[in-house]
Length: 425
Image 1 (cartoon, one colour):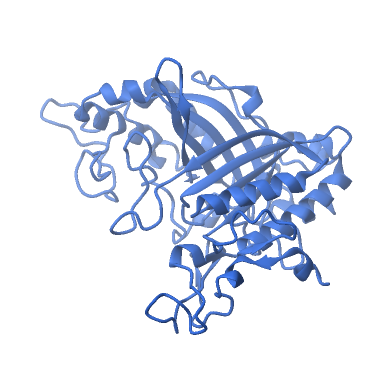
Image 2 (cartoon, helix red, strand yellow):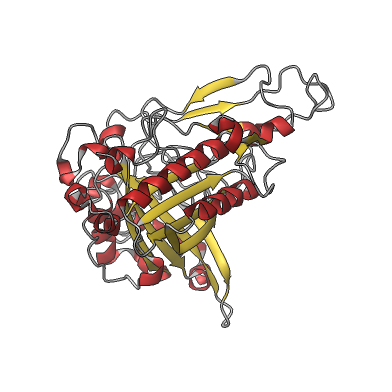
């Protein structure tokens, strides 16, 4: 049998959606380089079945993100409702050869799952679902290059992040040789991918840490909206957009450049900073609304700056109130993190919320799985975090508990596996 026949049984086929008429391809921004295909329902009957009587998937379930492309999926892909972050360490004795085999396995599995197919011997967890916007993104930590004898090819952009005064990092939940981000608009589809990739690791790699996240479900609001975090704040307003003329330069490593020590295998790739940020929700929720808004510098209701306008209105950092003080306080989170306050530093924030239970004292272990993307973390995350560390009003209500930095190579071409240009060069 062929590889595809051996490894894949289509979940969509079980629902009669393979080859559905009216399938349309959409691309999310030329700069993003990530293709998204939605299986249409043209030709369906009034009871939601296709012309052959088999049921059709809803739009949420049928949306497929392409595995191959200039950039890996899961960077510019719209936020999904369920996510898993997982880091692996190579097993003792495993090196470059074992890593090549592992990344091949992972790539075959990810490609199949993202197209709505299930590997042979599958558990059947997601048989009723389609691709559900599943994305699987792979990255390499600093220590991976030591374990595989590839230190000469390690970018200097992977140098350890500086220590920040507010950090309370747990080393057991930080860093790692390999990192995987999974996102989907269905919780079972996301778990299915997590389980499949963990099984694929076999004896080559062991789980170092794993975190689970969520966002608002697709279609839960009357119109598309910027996500809210667990503090109730609209989160992500200032993100660069794929339509910005300098988006690629800020977010992706260009080909033929040595900036930050990046080597050619990172062309089209990006660097992910991952932080587990616990929110002290009991303390935050005791603040009256006007105090919360001054901490952030934006209205809670619609995310607009305190200086007026709508969510997308530029901050007026010089506007003063009747008392002569700036309307947006000097220590407001939005002021300190604004690109114009940080030499134009920009990063694409793509976070997940998390809730890992209630502590014995009744406080929630909840907050933000902060993931940001940039072409160079020394020009993106680091300068902004340094400034926040020195005087952000929000710091009193959060704790940075884990951290990681990963080099995420460009997307694989047809016939390639993720990381092939590094491992086989």
